[in-house]
Image (cartoon, rainbow, N blue to C red):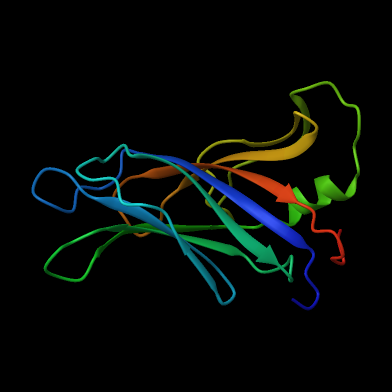
Length: 165
């Protein structure tokens, strides 16, 4: 792949207080899109507080593209219902990786991102040094829906022979 910088592993942890789209609950799943890439978690049946615990991996060629997240309710006999969306910028995470921080104590906070009108963060997002790697923890508030948040973590994977950061 031309101009590959590396891989972004997104750990889609869980949803919190998602919207009800069926009679009493929902069957939610997450779609992650970046450029032409599209990845999907598994469906968690009848749960508005699902734990996906899924790992999705994007190939990063353009660090300026936003990552889009969509939550849907799986339906058997009709189109899946939208349950909100969010987007996030990976530039601050990639900047932390470029610092090439080695040997920091575990759980050292590298930087913090504050929620604002310009982002979908529900609370402060921390980029930390964890087990010899840079990890970003974030809680995204879903837009275009009455309620719901998605918790995830970002991890970077260097590819031998890639352009790198």
